[in-house]
Amino acid sequence: MTVANRVLIVDDDPPTCELIRDVLSAAEIEACGLTSSTIAALRLSQQRFDAVFLDARMPSPNGLELTRQMRRSGPNKKSVVVMITGDREPRFITRAFECGVTFILFKPVDRQSLSRLLRATQGLIDHERRRFTRVNVERKLSMKYGQDQTEGTTVDISAGGMLVKATRQFLIGSVVQIVLELDGGKAPLTGYARVTRHTGEDFMGLEFETVAPADSKRLQEFLLPHILQLQKNAEAS
Image 1 (cartoon, rainbow, N blue to C red):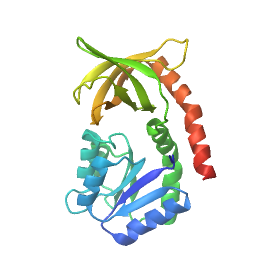
Image 2 (tube, one colour; image 1 turned 180 degrees about the vertical axis):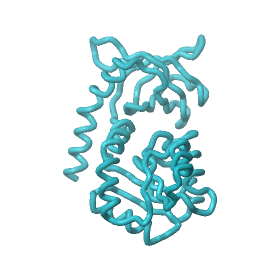
Image 3 (cartoon, helix red, strand yellow; image 1 turned 30 degrees about the vertical axis):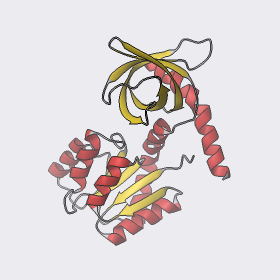
Image 4 (spheres, rainbow, N blue to C red; image 1 turned 120 degrees about the horizontal axis):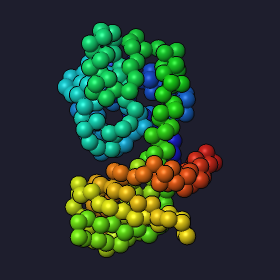
């Protein structure tokens, strides 16, 4: 499993798309480019990226429309979004941030401005990557929805959620109470998680909804050594 940064570039101007990809590749960031916003919308609904570069003006859906779609739901709800635009009007910039844009990259795009932007965004990108990096660890947990309760084990865990194998499935969208045994002998992690998907008859994807700050910190401390080992393995391969 690789933990390299993964970035999607969506711009209907091929030279701009290629320039951004070249700069990202030089920074050892895995990037793919698309010139069709329609294809990009489908990809964004199915696959998660650490950051997304979007041209503001494209045939529908344009950059703002794609940002709204991402922020409503899907795997890129919290990904870093960089809006590429030549529009410096305050009203447009305000609208872009209201849609959920993280950074704005003004045209004309050049290598120097891209390098400055990468330095500004790297911390956020790394934070989101770690949040979604899944580590394969098996831990016991129980889940309760109303009067219904089930037991299970984790298949993998990230700071944002987990895949679990359980004796029964709850409906997608259900918010379930969870009790997760992280470390033997210590108090379990408790909170609430939303069922986001079913995989086969026995597996459910859960996204953490409400977890106490102290438990969230414990979870990150638990995951960090596993994530660092993944990074080490990726660098060695």
